[in-house]
Image (cartoon, rainbow, N blue to C red; front, side, top):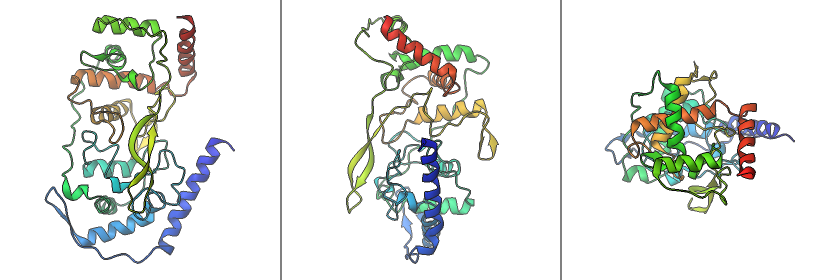
Length: 332
């Protein structure tokens, strides 16, 4: 069976289980108001409505207990989020902090690209209710306030796109001196000799890549649960493969020209979404927050450079580049 066929069958199973949920669900439990660490209190009626929305749309994958162990979630990669951990990948805050409500609602409205997490067409009041209900699963919400939302700064490279890509190329491949060194986890997109020369020109440090393979990413440890015990505690953690921007779908970034939240997805929107995830990092994974760690102009330049790779996604140009890099390993 082709992978696309498997994915389609998985989607049908999710939809079928979601459609059946209202018929087989238990009576809505009684809720007490939930007081959060930030000082607000969620009314019981909001939690009750959120429970109903969650049962209908979310429980088939994320589980009735919010532990990521729903019947449709078995074998999914990435695995459905275990809300009991209180860990969120895309929170609009520094990685590891609790997300803002706006970030959670954004994920619900948009979904996650390339995953079974759909963009649900749900009324705004129900989106708010289910976001509040998610907070019942983890004690973190009663102990910690959400992180400060990371603002989208002004793009300093407008009108100088080619220059931005060139700067971003260095930010991506070289670590230190105000650069991110993304290639240490993600793959490199420069031939070995060029990568070594760039590193030396920026840092003054010679590097020997003779026995290195900068073109193959390795799975990294994460804090995301695959399996849990009766208490919802993780018994096995997932590995995360840093994406190859030429071939992997990015969860919060879509191809230009598609429609996201009913609007055409432009190059600017794509670049801003890349900036957001780079600035915040990815909670529970090895991807750190880069906002404040490197200069803003370098962070934006990095978004431009990665975008120059993303637009080549799964094209003949991407395959040609990959082949040239593989050939360079043999020649050098």
